[in-house]
Image (cartoon, rainbow, N blue to C red; front, top):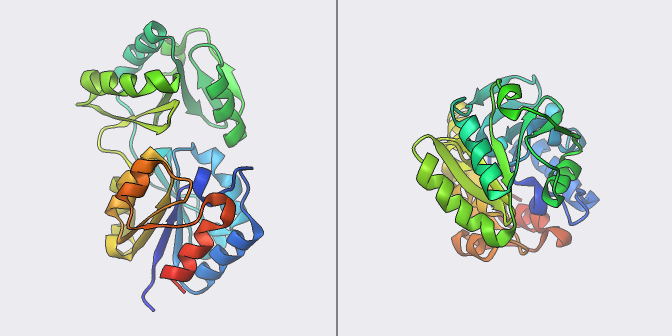
Amino acid sequence: MEAKVLVLDIDGTLTNSEKKITVKTKNAIIDVMKRGHKVILASGRPTPGMLGYAKELELENYGGYLLSFNGGKIIECKTGEILFQKILPPTIVPQLYYFAEKKDCGLVTYLGDEIISARRIDQYLEIESRINDMPIKVVDNFIEYAEYDMNKCLMTAEPRDAEKYVMELNERFGEITSVYRSEPFFIEIMPKNVDKATSLDRMLESIGLTAKDAICCGDGFNDMTMIQYAGIGVAMGNAQHAVKEAADFVTSSNDHDGIVKVIKEFIL
């Protein structure tokens, strides 16, 4: 059998509603790698927020990869080597801060094992902190503090407002950034031309594979590019409606081992 690449979003895809990988799903993924197939975790999470799952799946032993920050950084698990990364233009940071202040949005970026917040900690930032197991550090002068290479910024807003803010941010900064929602309340601000599909294409080319070899699974808005890109694009049963519409196949939900069904259907 030709080698396949199983590309998995984490939240709502690899993990169940309790943010855990079930034993059944874990064993199926490890079995796939033992058979010579590749596994890539592709998430909007920062790299530190993905490492626990990479360790649980033993990706360092089987040649796995982490595609973090929605494609802003790619790491080889075995060596820890950064294969690719792209950063936001530093000049945009003050403008994002003033936008967040005017709209009363949360605004964070990431440094090491910490989430750096420009403003208050809202309920949505508490979710970001909890799912990544990273503490939030609120800084007094975000513009001065954030003078380092950033793979992404994250804004938070009420779902009814977030869609509108995405449009406004794209109108203002669309020439130098990619802006989209990963959840109804999360607004991702990425370097231009960075998304899961673009970075995955770069990743696959480097290991001699192509889109037709990829089976990409996800549930959120930020998964749509890789689902449309893949030879087989899979939406979880719990996915957003638009994601299901973009997919080639809709599997069971993340609470019913949907990834196991994908492995049986398209790899084994």
